[in-house]
Length: 240
Image (cartoon, rainbow, N blue to C red; front, side, top):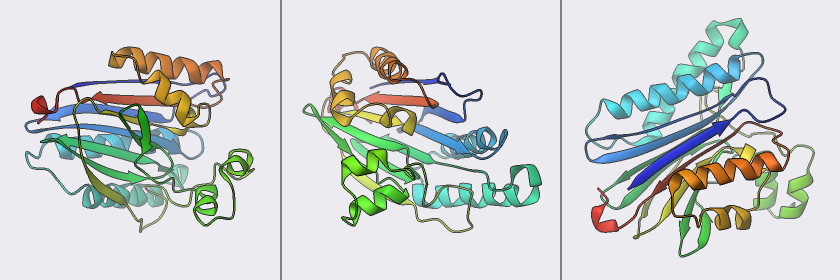
């Protein structure tokens, strides 16, 4: 299995509030992606603290941990910090994490960053966007096309650290040989369609995919921070 990732500040932001990390601990590999929010440096702090807290827990536990419980712990920590420091008031972050172990993909998610699975040339979104327009689309009140141009398309319905209680999306998927997994922030999905993303993910090397996805988003204006992290499962017999 191969894993890689890349992030870019974009052309219109002074600070990159995205943060990601990936690694391996014993029987499992993991990828974490976050997109911070908040004034001044608050968003940058939120994403880094969330990712580092989560990565530390994964690095120091040999057994697979319940991602829902772990993300709830991250939320408690960030919410506490934001209420203790006036400069960090209201800070928060999206948080998407996957654990790959023994042919299974475990997903934990809050916010509008995304986890995708590319299988047999078909790109499947495994996470739900926790956003106002996504809720309206799910309830049939907006079309996908209307959602793309909606003035409130960036409004999140929940994020890690902004409230004392969150509803974490958590699920498990059986992997197949040569599946590819993509975690990304909305700096990518605001610029590229799922079809465009799928086409670029046909590249054979993880590093090339990351470069091309970032490059394509920048070619569309680079209006936001953009982060991608990819795992290529390869032969399922070798996944553990």
